Length: 171
Image (cartoon, rainbow, N blue to C red):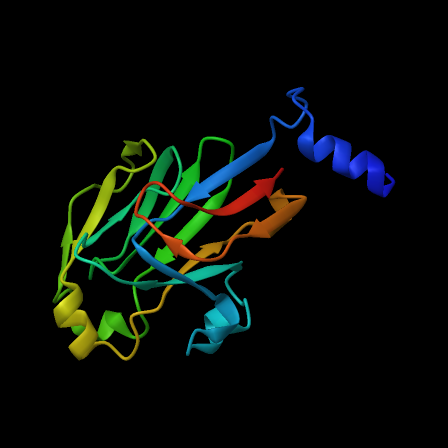
């Protein structure tokens, strides 16, 4: 496909692009490169590719970034996985080494296996406490089944929980 064809397909109104999935911010903050997360598992994309968010503000909740089904919510409530209705598997992990807090600062709202809509609250957190106690509050949002997609576009900037797109995926 030539450059003009690609440009036409990007601005085209016809819906042959139905396989694009929009992932919204699971929490408010600023998008950071996944490579900047101070944990080799995320920075080197061992568990998948994506972005990280530096949480800000007083809207202290993690929400479903897509319509889908919650897979696992960690016992310590610091992370969850979700599978979108179209088969994209994601992992949202608040902070680095937050498992060591044994659940302090986190409150589970949703349940494993629950079907949720984009923006549904999964976990609430105490940002002030976590800023003091966590090694890092950078929150990776990772696609774990990269083989299921053709293309990923990572967005940048300030994001609002449940509203701002952070990643576009072509299946």
